[in-house]
Length: 449
Image (cartoon, rainbow, N blue to C red; front, side, top):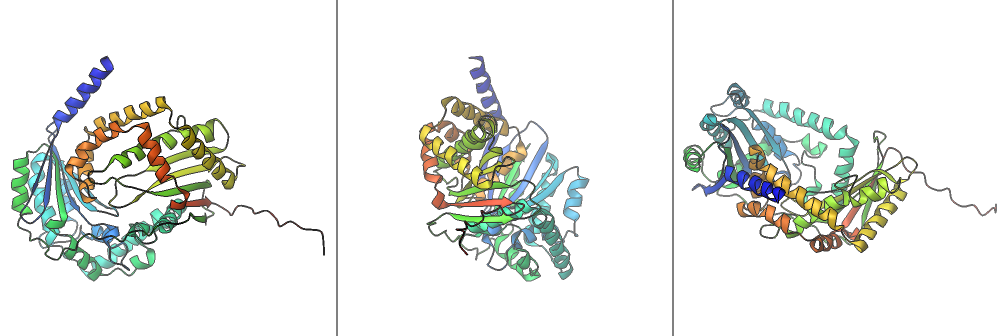
């Protein structure tokens, strides 16, 4: 009884701390206000419904390139002045690019919101790029790729896996871009992308913190409302994957790999507007199969009950505009081959599909997910990210608000149905990532000359 009462107080107390209000400016810019008056701070974010999966063919990396260039000069701001001003006002700022969106944010004292909107709206419409800017920042992103991808064998392997997973969809192209195309990105590439996609009717303003909706809407009208909509904004179209008719397999060999492993990714449904139930079931499935090395199905079977693996895990990220992936990874113990590890992984999955879900484990995960949703309400920046990401990936405010209840409504039967639908080898890519090729048996000799 005490535990139930405490959970109720946590839920109602956190919910009472936030109020979400939405609106739309006449130019089409969507506005989301998340009130939280517990601290005199505000998070100001502008999200664009465009990411690397929206890039034109042959210009991979231009979305991320433009993200860097957005910190250059405008008609009224000098190169780097925006970030310097945020810092001088005791705040922090940054930006990030994904397949489906690009976002810019500042976290400052609440009374600096006016200044943040003034600067952010300025660079939405008045960016000024020189050839020197292009040359300098192109080298920056190439170096970033060198550090994060070219020097990371696991990142390179992941690129190859995604390229094999998505034959037709742009999720098979890395967000940062292919190196040979990044090297050719031009000022015109950046400006074309900017002029088309960085417009108010393709943007979402999210303001979270010690603000009121009337205050935010008035400032949004003042600064963003005067920017004209882009009349030629294209419909957001993505090529669909053709049916996958057979498992795809690859070996990625790199002497820098520190631990060999086998990984398999399955195409899986994402969270869809008004239909998030399957995604919720897959959240449970990833936790059941590989969320904990001590209690998960794969962890127990491969690392505790046997000495097959030093690690076994599963992962699912439901936030995407289009089909995403469900991934299982097993790193074998010393002396165990990747083939043996894969056979043990498949045997464990087959046994799980036969035996079903342990009731105790399921209820523990349900409680953990409920707690994580409650604790998330205490992070204002996290909430702003949650709503911005959702709205740029096809969901609505109502979908975000319904998600905790949908998670709690998942049943073991829902999870097993999702598992049977997704864990299909004909819909998967299986990769061996290793420091050296596995030895192959010598051919048998029959003794004749």
